[in-house]
Each structure stands twice: as structure tokens, then as C-alpha cells.
Length: 305
Length: 305
Image 1 (cartoon, rainbow over the protein chains, first blue to last red):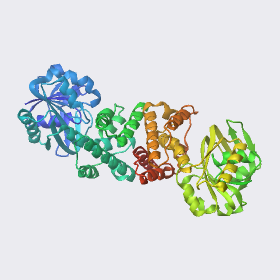
Image 2 (tube, helix red, strand yellow):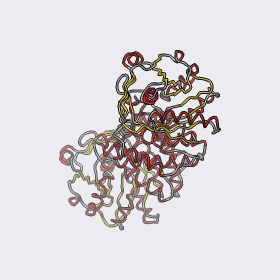
Image 3 (cartoon, chains in turn orange, red):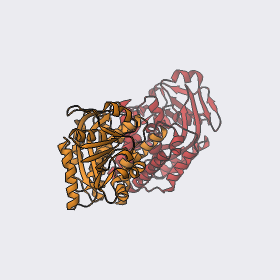
Image 4 (spheres, chains in turn orange, green):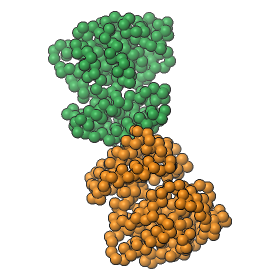
């Protein structure tokens, strides 16, 4: 299977390298690290065991890449508007786009641009970060939830199943869901409380779970997401929130991606992680006040910086 | 009239000095600045005109003070628990206690300790701060809202009116209200959004009103307070929130007291300004989520510091 990785960062680089390591033809799009990775390859320091790609297929521009059966888009949501229209050359008829990002509502935008492609969401529950040029450090977890935007039919189900299989075979725990909206909200159950609060509190996950006030705050935000999900017609069991707390309790102290973005002076994914779902819940009559307060504060911090 | 000032800071010092300047026998309790003020007096640099008390009546201990007709308690709410029981020696039968603090719910605690005293709340809308030993700098506003805790009867009304008169005569704009709970909530309409957000955003009022995200946040918090007031049976007109925004727009850039406390490493008045009213609203079935989020974040910042 020909697979394109649009955005070879902590997520795209990690999962793309796993697929290449498993024998697929994986084509990596890079910008700043192109020369380095072309010369030195790609290294994954993983808590599942380290491995390297010595001569990965790397590209500087999308139009140099071959058409692919699966195009994994793993750029930051903040550049979606520019990147989405540019991936047309790499799409193969009847193929699919797997959106491996945080956030909410972007698969719909892809579907409007590319109505003949399978549009999948990949919700990655993973602790990984870029640790110097060509190096991805994977410190914890790694599972991916997959769901297709379109209503399930035989053709869709077949494609989704094939994609899940190639990831599973490459050593990625996968979880296939029927309802993309629900799967996206489940991912937000971690991202909304922990990403933003790590920026607002200027701290890692260990502080978020041990400081009593922040523990109360993050748990309350999860309660709000449960209520919002219910209002949106995709109820999620309350124990799922408890599970997110437990996973974070057991996590090695970690800087969520939004904190890394903030510290590096990159734009924050406030619309992706907060704004879009707040708007979706609002359209379903539910007012997410905890999330709104966090979003305003994040916007202020970003503007000040 | 004999008047005691318990806590000669930016509030007690300012209003006490006005009363003394107007000819009342005012007795100031001081701690760290006792020696300085004993020797050099008390200076008020006021935007209404500067003035000084060259030989104010100052005391180190409550039991050295004479019994007074009016005892103005103007300490930080964080020491109420220690201070309230200590003021007994300075109370005169049939006199009153005027609680000149931010916060909510403390007049009730005074009434339990001193059931035979008039218990008044003084909500001071003033920009003032201590600017070195014995110096109070008064930069803006200065009005005080007065209300009595007890239900209004002829005796109460007479006392409340007398107190309002002496302040008015001393050059303080006063506003007498029948309902203390409502008056306290009106004061919170400024304190809840601006005090906490100045700490969380590490900024003065000018940033709170000009940054679009913080302006939205503070205005949303006010909306929540309007809803809470309604739920508590003391509806407040929506235009009052607009008025608070307008007053802050027109204010000289100002560090709210909570920010000064935070910068100086003093305890924050989170229970007084947030916790007590959040609990009161909760008991009336209303969940103040914006305020709760701010309170958790403030508790975290305080714990970290």
C-alpha cells in the first residue's frame, strides 16, 4: 500500500515510521528537516523498542509525491486551511485521507474538498514529541482510534477495516469506531482539560493530576464534556472520564502538545480543541462554560506572547 | 462620634482619615506601621485633593482603644477568623460594626458573635493602595454603598442613616441600600471578574478591558453573576454589568487588590470573593462555572507560589 505522510512530526513521523518499518511504501513530506532526514534517516526512540528508517522516501513538495492509497494528514490544525487544498496531487481515486490530528470538525472540511475519498479520523492517544532533527521520542501509550466520517456501508467498512489492519500489523493498537463524532469527543475528553490547563498552569501532566485545585478543575471540565456529548446526541459513559484521569495519573510526566506549541511560540490549536466543539455543543443548546473560560484565557496568553 | 478603624490600610486608612479630617474622634489600629504613623502621621494623596493627619489617634492593640459608636473593620478577609473575636473591647452597646471589605457572607459571622450590634456592610468602590509607610494613594472613584444586615426597622434605619450622613459629610459619596445581599452581589460584579483575572492574566485593568479575549471572559463572568443573583432571589438589572465595564474602561490602569496581594505573596481572598458566593448560589441551585474555574486556577497559583 502506498501511504503518504503529510507532516512528519511527532504523530505523522511516529505512525508513518511504524508503517514503513512494517514494509509499506511510505512517502514522507518534510519541510525544515528534509535535508537532515534525507541524509540521516528517521529515528524512533520508542518505549516499545527503538528503530530507524535509514533511507525513507522523503519529499519537499506534495507534487513530487506519488498518488497514494492512504494519505495521512498530521500537520497542526492551525495550518489546515492552507494544507488541505494542497494535497490533491497525492490522492488516488478510491483511496482515503486519514486525519491524524487533535481537534473537532475538520473531517467535514476534507469531505467538502474531496467528496470521492474515504475520510477517516485517527485519534492518537500517544505521548510523543520531536527530540531534535529526525528523531521522534515516544514515551508512553500509542493507541489509535479510527472512524470514518461517512455513514457505514460495505465499501466504507471494508476500507476502514483494511486501514485498521495495516496499523495493527505494524504494531499499533487500534480501535475501530462507528461514530466519528463520538470518537472525536472522546479524544477531546483528554485534550480539552489537559492541553489547555498545562498552558494556563505552566506545568506538565504530573502537576495537573496532583495539585488538588487543578485536579478538580480538569475533572469538572470532563463532566462538562460528558454533558455536552449527551446534548449532542452521542452520550458517553461517565466512567470514560475516570479512565482518562487514571491514564493521566499513570502517565510519565508529560508536556501536552499545546504546551510545547506555547513554549516554542507556535500558534495554539484553540479553535481545533476548544472553539469548534464549543460551537457544536452551542448549536445543540449546550453552553460549555469551563471550556469557554479556558479558551479565552488561552487566546489572551497567545496574544500577549 | 467615636469611630474605630480596625486595619489601617488602603481602605480603612482612607475612609478613617476622611472621617478624622472631618472632625470625628477616629481611633486607628495599626501593626507594622504603628511607630511610623505615631511619629509622622497619616497622609492621603487623593485625586480629590491631598490631606494629612499630623497626630492621629493610633493604637497597637484593640484593648488600648476606647469603646466606639462605630467600629470599621477593614482587614483582609483572610484574617477575619482571627480578628472578629478580638474586637469585643472596642464595641459600645447599641453601636455598630461596619465591615469595609470585599467578599460575601461575613456580616452573618459578625452577627453571630455580636448579636446586639448593628451590623453594616460597606462596599467601597475605590481605587486606592498603600504607597509607603503612612501614605495612602487614592487614584480613582471612592463611593461607598452601605447596607445593614438586619431587616429594616425604625431603629436600624436611624443608625444606618446616621452612618451614611457622617461619611457623606466627610466627602464620601454614599449610597444606602435596603438589601445587603444584593449590595454584596453588586460589588462582586466587579470583584469576581477583575480581581481574579488580573492575577490569572498577570495584568492591570487596562489589559483586562482592552484584550478582546479577556474582555469577553470578564463580561461572560458578569452574565453568570446576573444569573446567579436571579437564582438567589435578588435580581440585578443587566445594565449594571455594562456599567461596571464602563467604569473599568474609564479607570486609570489599576492593579486590583487581589493582584497586589498576589505580587506581595499575601494570601488571596479566594473564599471571600469566589468561594462563599459560589456556595450561596449552589445552595440556590445555580452552578457558577466561570467563577469556579477561576477559583481553581487561583488556588493553584497560590499553592504554587
